[in-house]
Length: 367
Image (cartoon, rainbow, N blue to C red):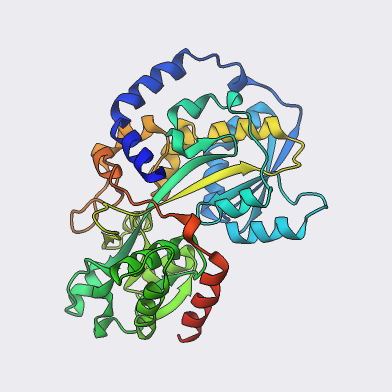
């Protein structure tokens, strides 16, 4: 049902985006101009360039409002573990990055507290399915095979159109895999499962298929390390995201993508959220921060500099017709509203992450 609702909403993107822009222009801006008294919020999010992007795009408004940002680096799974370990104690951070594959675990454990949507005027520009009392969705990406076209040409390897094409013997030892328990990896496994007769609830066909890639795998690494391995020429193709290729192309590499699909879907997105941690004492400052995350500056910055798909409908409407192309002339990020309406959203309610982790560990041990 969620997928159907999102599809219908995305079809209205052009009209709704324009209307939302007019609504926002007419809204009182009192909260957006609110001043805080030397308030500090602790933000748990991805380290490195991700933190830099937030500092550059959101930092000026936060500083002007009197809010200091302190960052706690890590991955969503690690943040969940920290909150579990801190039960009954002082919370380790105030606002937390949540990727959709662990969202339900945060909610079911009671680690999030409601946000005040009235304090987030930019909410009118966000697709309603990505924002509610518990979370604000501020980025998306689509799963893709990213590959170095020069390496494929040099070794006489046909450009891939699906996972199966990466089983070419010439690619032995040159395929990069995401960290095995990351949101990036789950999209690829679900796609493999469907291609081999399974689905989210029956993932074993996907795991069996994944075992065939073991001889091909160079390593299982984070996105940052993956980019380094592609730049060095050690990895020629990877199970990754489309936006990662955009950053590599900007660095001068001849990259192209093949979007990962399920059934007749145009692509498989992952959605990233921020949520307030239950027990925080700086709720209003968090609301201010969340409002800035879905504002124009942050949304354009993450799209232009990090290759992510914006959730702000006005920013999306501004950029989708001029979205960058890969080395082969294909679209990197799927941002056409008509194509986004055909996205396949994974049903995470059917996924047992603990069971998956054990099974993935067995595959990883084979490498």
